[in-house]
Image 1 (cartoon, rainbow, N blue to C red):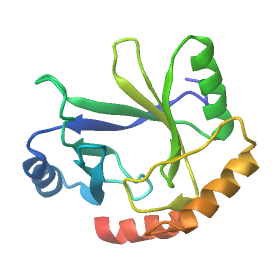
Image 2 (image 1 turned 180 degrees about the horizontal axis):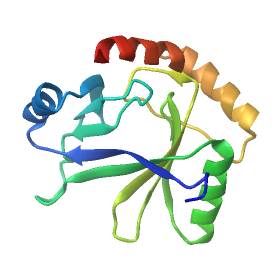
Image 3 (image 1 turned 90 degrees about the vertical axis):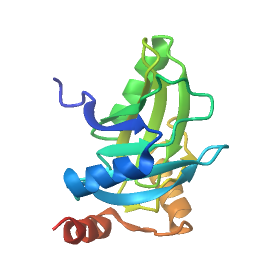
Image 4 (image 1 turned 180 degrees about the vertical axis):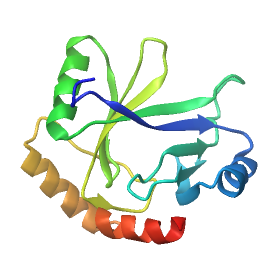
Length: 179
């Protein structure tokens, strides 16, 4: 693939057995819980797990939405891009192809766009930021702004959020937690 091609980095799964799944993936599979919280109008629980201190999460477990059918399993598939320019180029290509962008947010530790693939699966394409904030976290951003403006807005916003630190400091904490 081309250097700017999106690279699969994490998968989210809905489960009605969240506590058992977290125990299995931490105790048996050796992943580390990196964050947990609630999101959505119905306050679905979400747990972020990783085996890599440089990736906030490689695997996500979440309560299914209240309106999910019995078959709902995949919460999302997420692809990492190299930088904001690559994310902007992909965004432009998706829109030109008629794909509706559902969300464009910063999680503090990433800038993300969300959309559906032709099969209806939710996809996230994202770029790392140099910061960390406690997850889950979502704040809008605008890819029509310059990279410098997006960086400045994100940093200013993140400095006011619980758990703010540099990504490097968070990674150092995760190295200790995962060893």
